[in-house]
Length: 467
Image 1 (cartoon, rainbow, N blue to C red):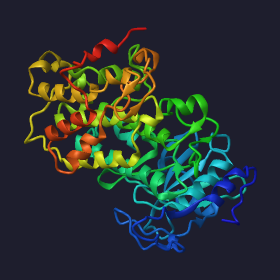
Image 2: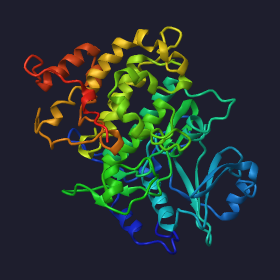
Image 3: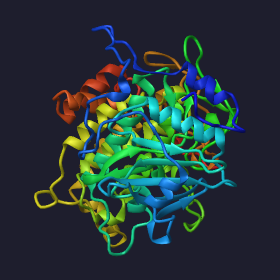
Image 4: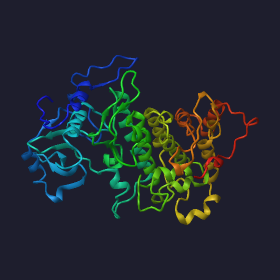
């Protein structure tokens, strides 16, 4: 990359690249494989994509020909960074996506350089493949593999009337694939990479709704050694930024986990992270969801109405548990992305067949019948899991160690969901290992060492204090 022209860019991106290694972190079980020729890896990506190779340098003329001089009928989409066009290479066989950066847009030379460097070094089936770039004069263009189904946002929020909504199975496949992309960045890349811009428009879909993360312009190298965070200016998209990052500029991998929780909640509910067309109190997805996490009668109401009740009831509650854990107010209380991948892999493996399963009402017309449906007992059991630690975490001494006293005021103040770590990924891990839901639930309850005879559980609703 030494010949790459980056006039006007800061030297910080170059420092990040110099400190970055494409090698995965060495394992204690076996020595790290030799990655000296990682760019010529022979692994073939899902969908028959060609293997990774070094990023190619294109001329502006080559890309103008490929996109028919950037004709309007080749336009795939546009945003603050610029426009994306569909193109064909000269041989006519390879379809590409060309992102032409707006010279007056949000993505400058530094972000352009960071994306080229990151995607040249990071190779994973759930990361979009960078084919090459162009830096002719003041033109900045990036060339990617073409993703047939567009972005998740196109299917979730900007769906045309003639397109079927995503079913439950597709949503879970998308969630676990996107989580695996983050897991590679956090746990396999060395040093770790913080994505910093996880949102539906940056999750691209190939055949069979296979997800790949794109747009690495805001990616940042994570903390190494004894450092717990990196400090940087706050960048990202409103509604997806973790609260501690938005307030202090302190960035950790748990910041990405929060963003993942927002997107996963969007997948489950069908709502946007920020939607000003909604009534007062519902425009912010997380603020709307937090009180509903505490009310077992409303779990079915949180499901996307477009699903029309076609989802597994138990899977819905487990998905809500994962989302709520990711959205904990305190970064330390959120799970690691590896735990999320394990939990979601279990959920995605439980293929839902609407023909063989009864549905749980989720439309307004079914509201009057919710309490009489067969989903209510399971909903109550899920509610018990969601609120198990609500009482104990308000004491200064809690199981397994000490926690700060929780003085949250409820959802109206933007506080946490009333729990610290109670939406248990361990329950799903136990399920993944073959235990039944009841066995996992009993194991978890015995582990927390709460004596129900000496200290009865209080109504979790008493902690939903009004402001």
